[in-house]
Image 1 (cartoon, rainbow, N blue to C red):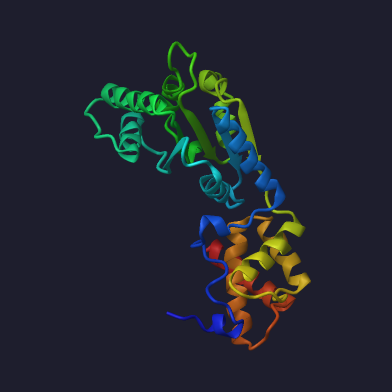
Image 2 (cartoon, rainbow, N blue to C red):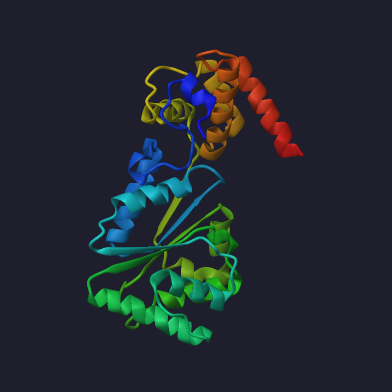
Length: 272
């Protein structure tokens, strides 16, 4: 169903929807650097830990990675349900790579290891992207380093990319997880948008849907940045609400008063 604010601002589609093709994602230079670091790590067949606060763009970085990584030499497998025990975790991975899961944990692990070795024989490097990894069961973390061990730990046949909140890094630094963490040589952190990034992000999302003029007043952008602390997910939500509110008022510019009301209403809603 068409939304009235789209016609008001002459937009082809909602500018702040998450339904955007990987190729159209806009990332500031700091996040583009993270994508480059991920590509470099995977080119070395290394493993990576990537952390960041909620909403700062970790998944956007992974989507940009998916778009840019060479399809011929890599096989990406994305898993987002990290709350499973070890056996069900391996069962999930088996389903994701197209293996019929076995009954026992040992058989599941053997099936995955065999899959990795077969891909290596085909000159394909598997990459397991494990999102929300800060929620992983300890028994799963205890075992992950074994999944990286091939040919007496002399061959890098698999890369793990562990993605999560900053507490993931704190967990990996514990003595109990040293065997896994010592095998992860690339350790990246995603920062929130800067004030300049926030303004550019809003402009680029509008440009993508056909609007090349300034829609957000500079003082409104400042308020949005302060309210979101540079978190892209929160910025999307507030900006979309502000466009709708501005259209209802039949204005063409999102001004400070509208931004302030939208932020206040959003804060009340979250405090319920």
